[in-house]
Length: 223
Image (tube, rainbow, N blue to C red; front, side, top):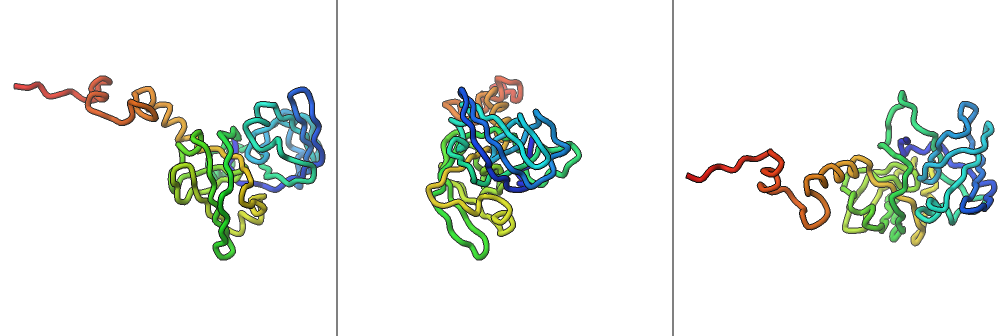
């Protein structure tokens, strides 16, 4: 599990194709001496496992499933990516709960300067947009951000200079694609409500009949 607070940007040194698997080797400006092979790292928003490791470098393997569902298949040597080590239970949770399990991708459709900051407008797909709530959280390429205006399948995020400087989001331009992970809590709430017929679909909404069927409402007897 991660927080979406990017620790650094890492540089891709090499990519090696394999049978349904792609290996990505990265140079990391952090001390990884306490990390171990098999540890998880959040790279551009995707949770990946280290198969080779040294003090300032690691190699991860990416399955075909991950390549299909994320933007990782478009990475090239020399590219910088957002990097975060997994969360310790004793760490402060400064961002939000991020699993590194990408729900879908989005496309940047607008970039507007706001003084020293930037507002991005991003169009996504229903697998992500159904969970978007203004002032809620979204993970964009591994970065925890607060949602601005949400309109259908389009949402806005407002980045301060600190976030732009410390991540790869500063490089984003219109038509670039990004990895997106929706808020974990929203997905669990939808799942639980779905057991009671509440959520997407024809049974949307809470009614007296629904409450009565599950013992939360007792209709008054007519005299």
